[in-house]
Image (cartoon, rainbow, N blue to C red; front, side):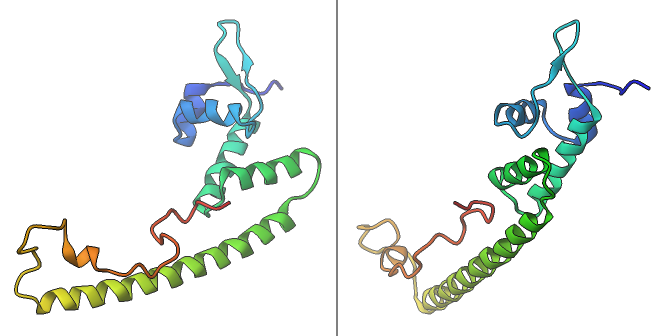
Length: 154
């Protein structure tokens, strides 16, 4: 029985991704280059659907495209990547714990600032010299930006 081939738009709709995303994944070698039909349209196999589903699920767990590419590369070379995935998950938990600690510190600082401002008659600069004196007088205590995406890692 011959495998049903799908056009990029069909796969995009089925998986709920933008066709541009599929082309980008091809470009960075997360997906194999598509075959071309007689009309020169991109056509894909069910394997592409499986890979795209894997990519989406891995991203939902916080994996970066680089990490996903490592996992898929291991699989493509005939290795079972689950041990590697487990190690990545452990690191992900460590990263999240660090971000939570940073956000907890930031929350504490913001609450302190909020209390200070609540005691003031006006939070505006009477002299009109600064942008917002309360922000400008804050000592920067955090070494990293806790609002950076949790998905961004080196």
